[in-house]
Image 1 (cartoon, rainbow, N blue to C red):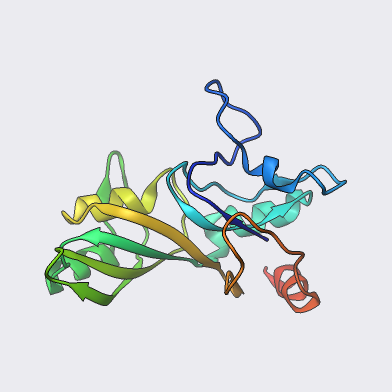
Image 2 (cartoon, rainbow, N blue to C red; image 1 turned 90 degrees about the horizontal axis):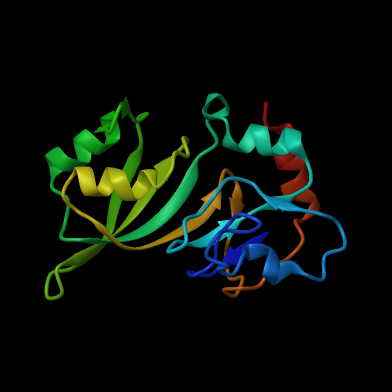
Length: 174
């Protein structure tokens, strides 16, 4: 379980030679790869594994594993925008699955709010696109949980091994 910092890619390598999350776990002997992706500007929970079945269970929408994000967005979503977000939005050529959004803090002086967002899909930059679709672009984004696996107080850039309970939970996903 890695707390990914902003400024790292979640692929092994890219054409721009940017730092990879795998650079943060060089002391792990096994060959691991990230489950799902967090974009370059997004921080937070990232599970690394060598288990292809687990990757499938956590990333395929049919398993409906919630990914929970904390987003700082411009402005404050009103009731209609929240309703639209929660019913699913048309983005590019698809409609997103229903999602949850809850405004947890408002800073009127600086015109932003902090929202907790839960999705079970994981399309490219989906949270950012959904927030932009309701006219509240993301200023900062952090994934806080995948299902029952929670980031808690793991320092940015650090990783830890999953607990026995977390492994049991992951194995129980059908």
